[in-house]
Amino acid sequence: MTAIELINSNYNVIIIVMYLFVIGFEHLAIRYLGVKGSIEHKEASMNVLVGLSSFPINAIFAFLTFGALFWAKEYQIISLPITFYTLIVCFILDDLRFYIHHRICHRFRWMWGMHVVHHSSERFSLDVAGRQGWTKHFTGTMMLKVPLVLIGFDPLLVIFCGVINAAYQFFLHTEAIGKLPRWYEFIFNTPSHHRVHHGKNPKYLDANYAGSLIIWDRMFGSFVEEDLNDQPDFGLVEPIRTYNPFKILFFEYVRIFQDIFSPGLSIKERVLYLFGPPGWSHDGTRKMSTDIKHLDNNKIINRKT
Image 1 (spheres, rainbow, N blue to C red):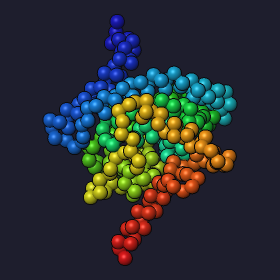
Image 2 (cartoon, rainbow, N blue to C red):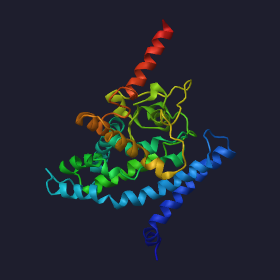
Image 3 (cartoon, rainbow, N blue to C red):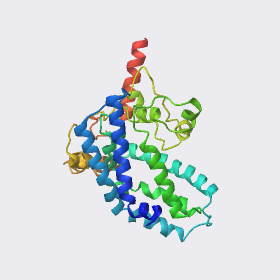
Image 4 (cartoon, rainbow, N blue to C red):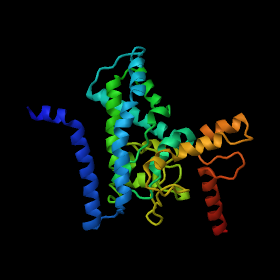
């Protein structure tokens, strides 16, 4: 058996070993080398469990997305070959697609029900990167890949670009890396930029949705620089503190259906509980991220006056 055949036959095992090795290395570096970060073994173990389970479960339902991509290939405007140049262009466009997908996941509650799993940790480390929901193929946002196929990119190339993007983002989830060179921070997403995205500080809400390229946030007005004098406070505005993986995976869906089936609501109000912004409520008793930012801005203005 050649080395390539050995790798191909044990691909999943190699990926899992590498995944665990990198997470373990970060924990050792935090504990023994004094690099910045936090260790919480019980939560980290739960994150790894959720991460390892999310891969096969999402893979089972990937046929929903992949089927749509290969269906769209039959209706392509043109058919582009797979070359180095089409790879680069496809990656850039797919990264823009990710930015749109990511922003939608923070603005519509049904999509947030999947994504909130990732944001519910009050730590920021590589094991949190794997803390992903099981329902991404049911949000509808994966269909944003279809236009890339329709304009000519091969479905396999689109899928490959998504994998590369996800692999890059894995390494953004760490406090161990500070600021990188200014030119790199200007173009690419970095741990510093992504720490902002995971912060629940009012000024960090709804910011830095980028996948690999931070230029989209700069272009569309959602970029916020990490303030070294006001470090991100990670987690949800209303934290869910549990080590039960099923509660973490489904708590927002439970709340959504409880709200939808509350008595005395109009059809519009029920629809808004499903597709409105997270934090929306029919009686105004809850706060959306825009409300929190507005209140914080008013406090800052009052302090100055």
